[in-house]
Length: 150
Image (cartoon, rainbow, N blue to C red; front, side):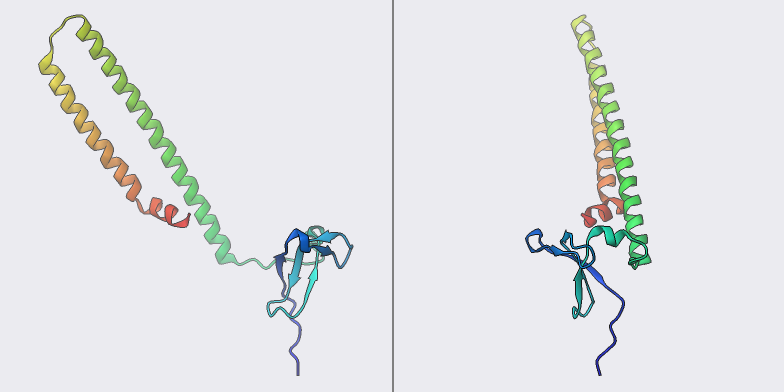
């Protein structure tokens, strides 16, 4: 006895050079509906696939939820990256402004060597804090998940 034909079909795409006419409207198409056991197939154009009376897709809810979660995660990572870059630009501008002020003070002939050492020490601690933040962002679990998904 032969098994009954299931009413489950998978959409496959073939090369444009292998396109054949749609079995319904005879327009050339590269879409093929095929059974899971690959015993039966027919060519179908995209217009008929969109027709609600012709066929409906089987949606895997777990995959859809995972895809949505991944998209949300990517959006969140992008916003965090953007905020971080803006913050870094702001810090750089402030640092450049301080250097400019320092140059202006030096050109006026003021001798503040002790103050310059303190400012250099502050700059070094700021650089260390900045490196630590970069490491935290790169090692965060969400960022690792994002990188693993690419």
